Image 1 (tube, rainbow, N blue to C red):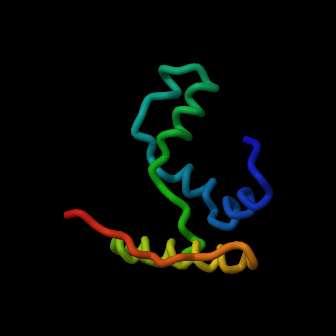
Image 2 (cartoon, rainbow, N blue to C red):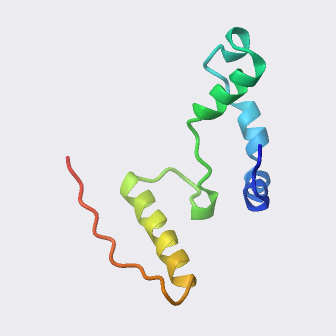
Image 3 (tube, one colour):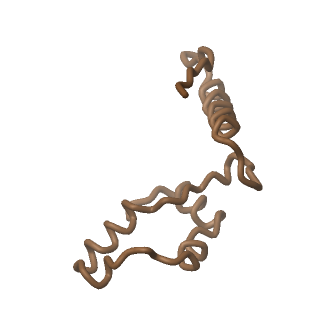
Length: 95
């Protein structure tokens, strides 16, 4: 699939293959599409995300998820060093 080494390591660490195999598929791609298109369609419509790098062990509210993602982005940008900066995290919400 052209994945980088880091992507492959994250995939293995999260046991994504086994988790993906256990989840029921709610489509008929294999029956209705050629094999290569069925695989592409399945990959495009995946609904689960690997957020293991955030250290989440249970369900969280969207604002907590956002807070953790912003913190990781902030940490990453600051680690890049000179020439990079993180300016605020003011995000507005509409209800």
